[in-house]
Structures are given as C-alpha cells and as structure tokens.
Length: 448
Image 1 (cartoon, rainbow, N blue to C red):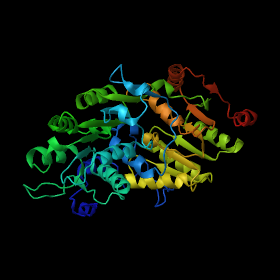
Image 2 (image 1 turned 135 degrees about the vertical axis):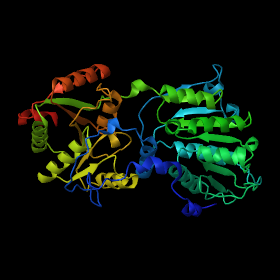
Image 3 (image 1 turned 180 degrees about the vertical axis):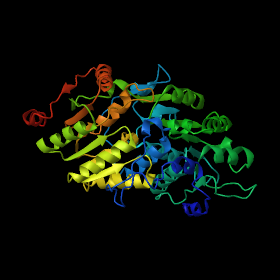
Image 4 (image 1 turned 30 degrees about the vertical axis):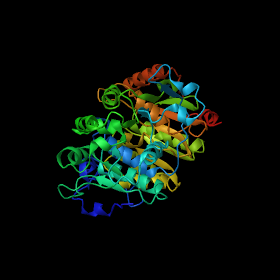
C-alpha cells in the first residue's frame, strides 16, 4: 500500500495548521513540564475556554490519539428507517438486506466508527480496476492521516489495495490519472482533483464517506465543497456520513449530502446521571473553595480526580496550590498543542499524576477508569452566563463510568452560581444535595 512518506513534503499541516496554531503555549502563561506536571507560572490569561472558538478538529484529533481500545457505550441507539416497510425486521440473510444502503450515523470517538466505514470501502473495491472507487473526506490533514492509518492496518492482508492522500502538498502532474483504489483527503483538494485537475473520475466512485461532519461544517468552505463533490457522484454511489453531534446545522448538512438515508442516532434522553452522586458546597470566595477541596482530600480516599475551572488563570493558580499541598498535579489547557495534551492525558491515565486540573478543553471523550471524583471548581456557563448543561453532563460524566458509581462536587460561591446550579438541577431533574465540607463525618458518609 502507498505510505504517507510524501507527507514530509507538505509545506504546512494543511488546513489543520491554522486551527492548531492557537493551541501553542504562550511563553509566559501556563507551562507544564515535559511530563505534563505543573511548574510555577505567570498566569495572566483571563480568557476562558468557553469564550474561545471551539476547536473541534483539534479535540477530535486528540481523542483519536489517546484512544487505545473501544469505548463501551451504554447509550440506547435510535434507528430511523428510510422505508417504513423496511425488511430489516424480517430478513434472514445479508443478501436480503439489499446492501449497500445510504447511512447517516451519530458516533462518538472510540466506538469503532472508522473501522466500520473502512470495512464498507474495502468490501466494495475491485483491485483489478486501477482507478479510485472509494472516496473519504476528512476535515483536516491530520484526521485524514489518522483514517489512512486505519485503512492501511485493515488492508494489510489485501496487498493489491492502494491508497492515495488528496491533501495540499501532495503534488501530482496535471493530466495524470490516479490508479489507487481509495482516496482520502480534505474537501478543497478532493474537489480540485475531481473538477479542475481531473485526477479522479467521480462517476466511478462506489462509496463516498464524509467523516466528522460536525467538524467539517465548523471549517469555513468545507460544507460547500463537500456538497459540490457529492453532486458529481453517480446516483448508485453508497453515501455514509458520520458525526459525533447532531445539532440542527449538522442535520441540515447531512440531509443535503446523503439522499434517502437510514439514520442511527443516540437518544438524547439516554444521557444519564444515575450512577453519579452529586453534591454542592457553599463557599464565599476562591480561598474557601480551595479549603473545601483540601477537606475533601483529607477525609476520603480519592484514586484520581478531575477538577474543572472556568479560566486558565484559575486553573493555573489551583494547580500550583495543590502542588504546594503535596498532590501530584497535571495541568491541561487549550493553549497546549494537541500532542502535549495527549501526553498529559496519557500520564494521568497511567496514574503518574493523581489530579488533573483543566478548563473545558478535556470535558469530552476522555475515559480514565480510576477517576472517582469530578469537581466543578467553577460551574460551566456559556458565553451569555447561562448554565451550560451539555458541558456539565460531559464534565461529571468523566466519573461513574465503566459501571462504577461516581462522585461529583460543585463549588458554589455566589447567588449567581447558586442560580446556575438550581437551573442545572431543573434541566436534569436530579436533586443535588448540599455537602458541609467542615463536617468530616458527613464527607466520610458520601464516600460509602
């Protein structure tokens, strides 16, 4: 199979280079050491992660880098058939399914999605035909490369199979025809290869995969380019679209790209907090919140904890204070490059640090079995100051995983934050009990 050695010639890391540029460490701000452990900083960054443009591509890449096994997802799946008379309930063989069919699927990172669509592509390739038969769009250079690695791994027993990368920097001579069977790339370059440079004959494509649709539409231009590519494909081409989330904008995009689809979605109401005990602690200021945190650590055994802060400045201060108290602390921030974030998370997963202090940058997709406590040092709010219920769910969802019971503690330091907490309770219809961290007996009870 074709290797990715050509990537050395790429000028910059294609579209993702722009998105990753704002993740570089600022010299005088947060400075984890080489292992991700906290060192003293001049933390003057007031800006919260919530106030920044969410970098979905970087988050998706981070999840792919730190995944080393499949995630056990307990959410119920909702299957919406395109045909009310679908035979799926009565068929007795694969042949009767009349596959392939078009698909729109909601799929979190780590659930085997890439393997599923790679298998679909591999099953349709006819190696004797020396032209592209399968086309896969990824939002960025790095994500395309990650998918390419999966194709190469799964196709290693298929020696005739060839793979090409359609990304900026992979220069081909004008008029040249591609002989590789599968092409994976970013929308702009794929569109050029199909329409302008004629490297690919889109009418011969049998499987079209659009991966990370929610990331795709967050990148300027990618949505229109993807739709233009789709319109060049033959009517009998199988079209598969995957997205981790399904906001209205993603749904509208999916319907434009995939005609007459079967739809697999996660039921929103299945996002459950049943395995997590939730408490709140009343405080007057930041120092009292820190003292409450110390009391928690003094009274119960905490294997590993994740602590979420609203700003980088608070996160940096808290990490330094916990380090002074003798805790093994790692600090995670949106200013760090993706590779640095992955290294910090890997050390935390291995237990080299017991406390991970972070802003929202790692609220999603990080599964660490030993995390027994999640602490919201600051409650999550959106840019308008309203409760961010989805972020709250993803934060405290870091505990109570793998069938274990978890503990979430929320620090409340004002009437406003109490109002936020009450609205979160109403949204999830779950009572959050008050906890007096000055009463050691009470703290010990919640650990049992």
